[in-house]
Image (tube, rainbow, N blue to C red; front, side, top):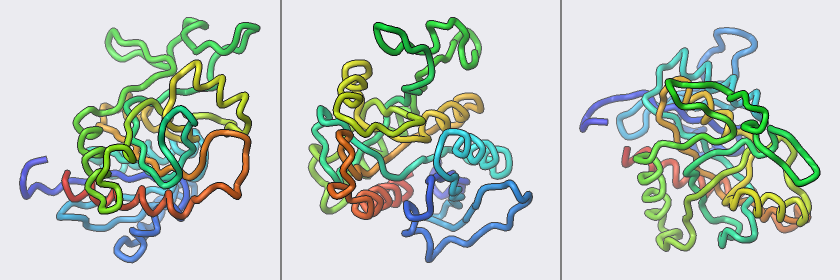
Length: 249
């Protein structure tokens, strides 16, 4: 974006508790249809931002980003919220993860030798030019660099050790056992797990919209124990990173 140039920036969170820092300055936009997701708008550093609250899961997220693109014509889209990180990632609760690529981690074929992606079936999710897309979607490299920089600029997160970029997995069933976490680590070498990101990356790829995803780590992906989680801290740190990113776009 050029200096002094105003643009619509799309923001998507799955639940409003992940976007509370926008509450005081953003205003609700009236729904054009009863089935529309909740949208809010506000001005951030001279740019108009549109925040969509999608609800949990791939279909809700895909619906929200489609409406956002069709109705508001954003110049780019930022998906943010909380997520689980894998033991091998080196991250801890409260740290920041930025996606380099998004992967549908449970759409494909499950055989005796393990999980195989949609490419085993031989039918891509879609084809754009000569490029066939199966389970993986790359995110926008310039936005990734800016997102990492924004997270590093946060006062309490100036050290690169607390901000990492890597592969994100999108799942329909959250991982709640060490066994399953290990299977996913061996298969994908992932950084973070969530329930929406790949579907947003999918739609953004279809439309050719630059996309980046930022998540605060709320828990480790292991045997499920909510007593070890800190969703509030993760959401707060993630929103600080998003606000800083909006400031430098």
